[in-house]
Amino acid sequence: MTTLGEKRYESDTRQLGGLLLTFGALITMNSLTGIAGIVAGPDSTPQSGKALYDLIATLCLSLVGIMGVLMGFVALVHDDGSKMWSLSSCFLTQLAWLPFMGNLVGVGMAAGQEGSFIDSVLYNPTTGDVKFVGAMGILSILAYASAFVGSLSFAQFGLYAYQSGGATTKYVAAYYRGRLGYYSAVVWVAGFAQLTLGSFVLAKFGNGPLPMPIGAGPIVVTFPELSIFVGVLQLIVGMLGLARRMGWICDSHVPTKMFGYLCLTLWLSMLTMQIMVQVGYPAGPEMVPMAPTLGCLYFALPLMPAYLDYKTNTVPEELDEDYFGTRGAAAELETREGEKQLSGSDEEEEKGKEKEMVAEGEGEADVTMEKAV
Image 1 (cartoon, rainbow, N blue to C red):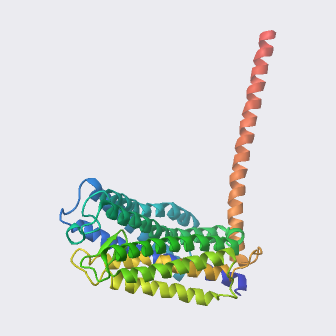
Image 2 (image 1 turned 60 degrees about the vertical axis):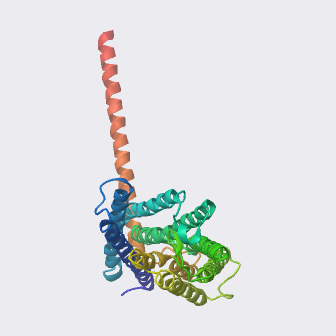
Image 3 (image 1 turned 45 degrees about the vertical axis):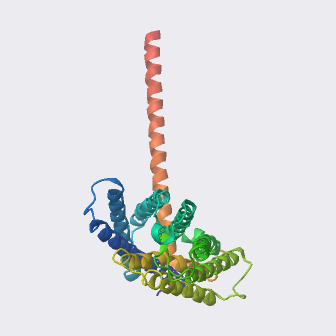
């Protein structure tokens, strides 16, 4: 008969599997759009330089996404998995940073070139204008990449912790509270970049729709007013999440469901006001692939605070050893037995060395005695 603890274990691992499956699918689709854009570019398939780096980095991103889909499917549907594979995938997932590092370098290099980010004929921007837009682009890349890659790593490390028996000691309310603070800060940084760039464009170049979009990285501004609105909403969600992490606003003030609905509203606002309008309105041949790419990239930013806030308010501060039932205990016992076997083999090896040293000492003593005789 299945116990309540075993049901908790199954529920948590399948939640993580669902997150991993979702994020893996989004990463895969994001990478496929990037690969198609690079290969179908004006120079055909790149063979050197930054274009080749972008292609290799995007292929690595595709590999990470496919791996996430497979692991998430096994955990969600079959309620199964391998802790060694989960641990290996945690390190392999860090390859997903490669495309974003390339984007950071590309935006940094373009910030010193005339006509980058802002059309020089239509707007006649100064060098300071271009560098400011580039700076906000770099800030937004860091924020969205942290949420994008971090969410996948969070799910993979979580599965490994459950499979190795470490969930009862680590995955308490305090852990989720700390993660909530991190992802809320990431949302706040993204909102700051969005609001600042929207306000700058509105003050410098006027109301939307602009004759040509202005932006860098994952931020595109065609209607500055909408960028300001989305930025303010991101700041509100980020600050509210940080306040809940610090305990200043508890569940009795703002219920978990209400915070989750606010995050859902943020995602819908980003989907409509940042992609459908900002990118879709002036869409040309060069901007068409940007819409699905940004749609995949944006998803983790509003989702993670909602999920972590729910876990913070539903998981106890301390977990008993039988909180996850026999499955959690069995995973922990297996890990302990492996550690004992490893330590036991080390002890046997040390004893063998001691015996060898004693035998060598006795042999030297015998030789000394023979010489003395």
